[in-house]
Length: 266
Length: 344
Image (cartoon, rainbow over all chains, first blue to last red; front, top):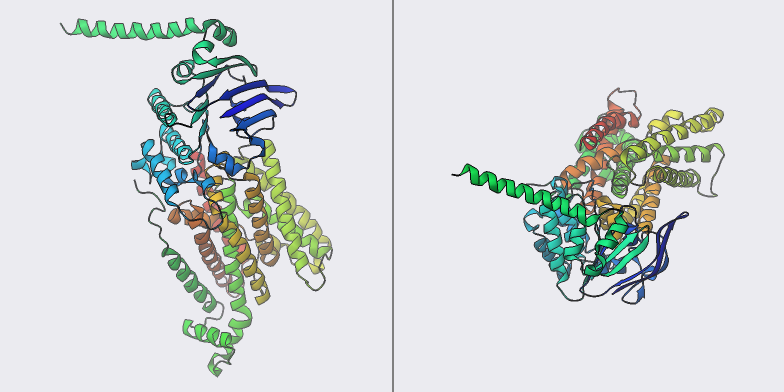
């Protein structure tokens, strides 16, 4: 579906992304992981034609450089991590903007198809009840869901997600990732997402691209990439040990709670 | 929860239009010489039909037809144009404080007009086109300079950066203008005209030019209402949903420059109209530009006509520059918006 060959992005003399090649096919969820500054988001920016690059990025065989913004938006949806809306648009108005690329011509009218896509997107993300609410009054999680609904309404076949749950709490994190994996179940779709959280990458990713200083440290099936040795060298620390520490802390606390509960109820 | 603009319906445009019309006739009939509304209507109808008025109405007609009617027409059209320009810029830059006066575009346009007059830049057969074209060019140039500088400093174009650069640019343009006027004072209107604005002595020809500009630019901007909505949500978001960001930005900037340039060349800098009106209209229509733009035009016309009425009746028989009135109201509203946007 998406093929990237020898992609390089330079900012002055600094190579943010250096000669990367990868591909995503239907039904796959590619996770791009790596330490801060490894060039994760830059890859997505290049795919959405936001930064100049060398190399080739093709979507279903077409060179993305040669496509216009609207036709690109009809097949590729982008969800970024931060949103700040300046005015009191309603949830529905923001979601409806997702149909922008589908409505051609100067005097286009609402088509039944647009309506259906907006309704489905609102329903899928559980925003139907909030549709008339101003986006300024939404919580961070609700706002992110609104923009996810906008991307869904766009009816793309490929989703690009830039750390979609970066500043969201665990409840919303789970919610958003469940929504996306449900979306992916329809045939002919694929997802590429940048993630910080390695456990999320592990659970949801079918493929993983592990970046280190703009180069691919490992690329392939998630299970193969997420080996302790690879991770440790990329992050320059014992990742597995740190995860174990975190988990141990949890276990300890649960056990203490159970113990407290036992002793308090004779 | 109820949301602003939810109950806005198409028929409300009729209300806007009706209010505009009422204010228009009221402004034509009130003034240093008060003329009853009934007589005003009679005189206008007579004049439109081209028949002479009754003897009792001769005086009224001599006030209304050559002086007051063209002036109020121009005021209404300038108000509508400035409000439209302000609303569009606020959407494009996602900044509720953007306006010709706060961004320094109006000062830039005035500078262009003053240069054209001082150096005698004219087009053959079109005596006032030189001022107008220079005003438009300088408006566009100022916008490009201000936004260029702002982008360099801070890519997100935050409110503070834009306003600060706008103020500095405004001062710069005004001082150059003062220098030119000092040296060529004999054929340029007073500095007050260019900094505070006035539509005293506006003609029917001015009104026709303003109407034509408003028609063309209004159509262009309304056709880009959806794109402006996307920009108001966020420029990055606009790009992601498939808006041709560069093209739309260029179209809107050129259109806005035309509106401001024409207004400034005819009426000088009348500040804050484009700031106050869309802000108030947004409380009725919500931020959707499909409703905001037309409603802003009507309200801008009403606002400026009322401001003009105050300007010419408050200290009767002396007259205040119209920009004084709009700036007093505008400054208060500016502080309110700024305060609220900073608190969020």
